[in-house]
Length: 194
Image (cartoon, rainbow, N blue to C red; front, side, top):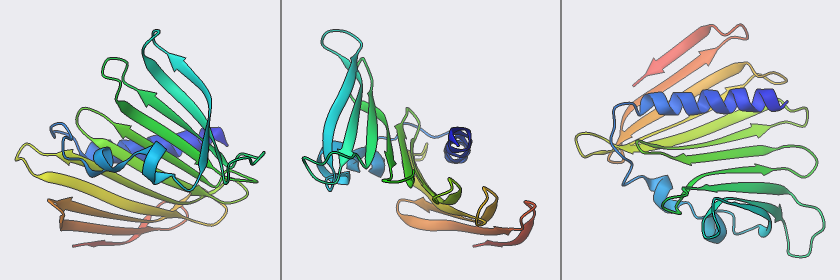
């Protein structure tokens, strides 16, 4: 199960990273500026610090929180790990896993030098992927703000890709859309590019 999760996360991260090759630092990245785990994005959950790792006495490198639906609950509904740059103290990555009776959703966010990468993966009760979404952002050599976002769906009961949709934006104006549909053997059966 964990192997499937890591393979799928790696695939989504690879797609996002490849689409941002050759771009400059993501100074204007929306996800980089919008994400704040402690204040907004997961404010519906009560967070309780489980542990933290320190690079030195004054520098935190990692924190892990349990997520609860309400303060005082005994059963956690998820956890989040936050990783910090040990030189600047800025958050550079977080992962969130959610689910009461089984793993329902995994979120992965990374802020690097050339891009930001955000993905969400959704699972059924048997641990099969249902859907994955992603978004990555970068500031291009031309000074424009680029954003790629997409979604994959999977055949029921398997990790075989059924559909892929990807939209590409430049300064929030869409300039390319790609939709592909696959059969269960992984062959493309339809493709639309706009």
